[in-house]
Length: 369
Image (cartoon, rainbow, N blue to C red; front, side, top):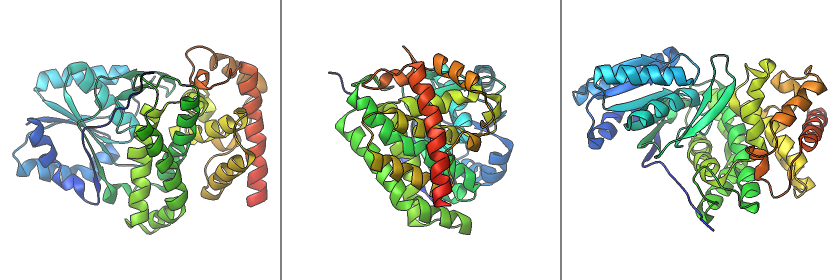
């Protein structure tokens, strides 16, 4: 059996680390970065980044990210890189901006650095771009030959992001171990082109345990606007541990739903991690090997944190059962992450699990709140 794991070449995390970004670019032999960022991200970090580049006499070109990770935008960035002669791509922001930067770099065979400025998902470390159309509907993903050359995580910037983004990141990371465990039990092939290694399973479990240990206190630190040891550990769990865990550990039903619930216009305004939350509860109700105690433990934790646990929480409370069934038909069978379980998952199985998850989430919210 082939086992494999892939990792970013370098991971740097800490308060203020973006102020030294030029010391990461220079050793890669690069002198002219293409900076990919959105308007809000640029406003938050441009002073720090441009000051560092100036110290090392690095010139740069900027690209204003539109907000959606589309193949069209990736192609446009590639055209600009060719014209300008940039020799490295540096993405700043959330998962979609980082994914479009990774895609442009991969197509041109260039080095890439990912600088997440929000802890909203576990995309930064991966050799993957998830593509959307201009309306925000997921249309697929590409796997690249290599992971980012560096991932730079400035927790001093991250702590200023909206609390809702961190909660989405926690939801995304919470699914990592549960999906990796299910994928490993089925000996399913992961995005790393093999079954999970022992190290990946251990890191996935560490991610899971760290979330339970630190999330509530880290969210208090975010409210206070300060970086604490708990916040640092939570960011590492959501970014590095979860990133390695999903990519080399495997994806199952939680992310099948997390990615493709974007096909419902009602859910468009919700972040990826929020949709993964409902996908996770669905998987927990779907899997016959899940113990009742674990179901209660995970869902009650989500309720305490204020994560989505019902269809209404992702604005889908009024979606008809007919539409949900159509969705389930499209999201089961060969090629679906739901096929990565050690048991078959039919459209009716997924439909039943989604409705059961909605009912269970509603019951736990009523009981706890």
